[in-house]
Length: 161
Image (cartoon, rainbow, N blue to C red; front, side, top):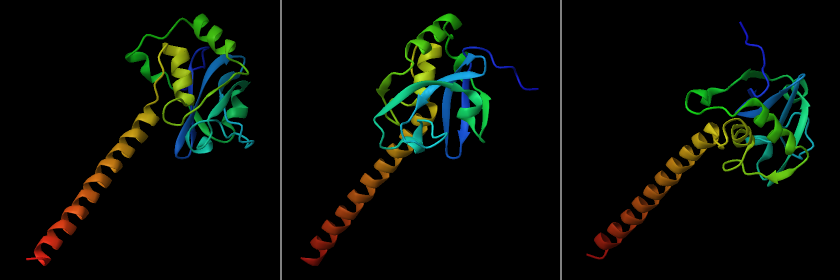
């Protein structure tokens, strides 16, 4: 059975390789970060906003933001952090309406925005996962480059003997 939406709930919207995030504020409305890409349902998280450095805080109908995508209530950090009182979540969310805020797909995305509203601290598990992959790739690239340089040096030493 699907749980009924409550004000202050975080909504995770599945958009292929990434998730867009919003906070439910009642009457079928959500507040979320939206890119200025001009694309319908683009959201402002990850793939649809690479290269964007600003996003707008908007209040829109959940069904319009979701479009044809699937979504779920995802207050997954409630076990680790105490949610702020609903009145505080809503007051802060509403106070940002229309603002253009700095946006970075890894450091300040739509998931950071809604977790800041709900818990008072920003967090993005999907950005952390991307960072881990980038860090692993960077590490393996460095090791690979060092191996190539080392192989080249050894080859030159052996060639000159």
